[in-house]
Length: 441
Image 1: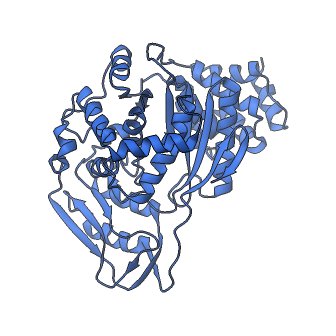
Image 2 (image 1 turned 30 degrees about the vertical axis):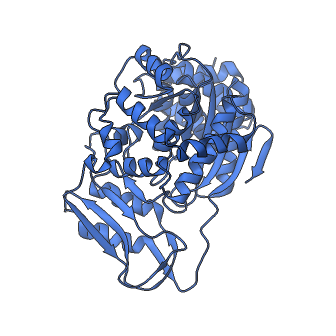
């Protein structure tokens, strides 16, 4: 095949064959196709788009570039969940044990964070002794025993995607729906999922700022699932303000404990129940979403969800006493209150800015080499729609290193918009996307 001809074909808006896409991804992965030609191809895709079949072919080509995790030893339908990311997104920490209480295997491969806060593994490592380093055989055993386990991603999962993403990042081709969709889905499928539940965020704190773009991405990923034989649904949810009230690592573990005990923030609880109910229907244990949700609500009410979290933590060598006594989790040297200077109503919270503030305190990484401080972070006391009076505490900073305290305090105040008129928070669940189309929630 001829690389230049394939680039020209896509540049002119024609559909590439499976073989042509395989050739491009394989050749780039092995180094036979140089960066400058792959850059031209990525720009052609950016400008011309891809059909659903092309996007599915691209996904499978990226999967074929590396290892595929074999979870066949795990009993039952493995349903994975993926969030496109946001600020204070504690959902996985709540969702995984909650779904596991229904006997559904939750086999989660997660990564570390880069940016606002730590990834799921960083958060779980706030728990003393908790380990995500294990072989697939042990991982499968844990899921069969406890219905839940989380381990780190293998180093060779979809290497072509990693290489292509790094190229897209420096060639202004990141914002392409087919390239984003295939990047996300290739990792989920390579990780061994039988079915996939997607949480596609929209709003200021999300990658997709506009709801229409989030829906387009959701539709593209659901179509990929359909083409490659993985039942996939997507929930489009709001990230115009941080989810929940905790942004950090140990502080998010504490919020997850509260939520599983029925005392968590309303928005985090609701999103976890919606995603969890759909995961239960994807597992085929339930056919009715409402009944699936009811089962999850009962698990919270009767304490079995919190017990499952303890079992999960103990299974991976974590100190389960810290679930019973979250005050034993890493604690900051100082807790510094941030007080608002005017009265009114909270009409907006710049979510991305709050995330940056948490990173400045040490809760996230600016580079891959940075060390996470599990004890630090931000707890919000006021959300959109709340009334505030001058002098009210709107947030608390959890601090060890005081270097950026003044800057963070000022940025947090600027992240809040206060007005005289009350506003209703944006709708949390925007819509559900399935192969049957987009359904308003």
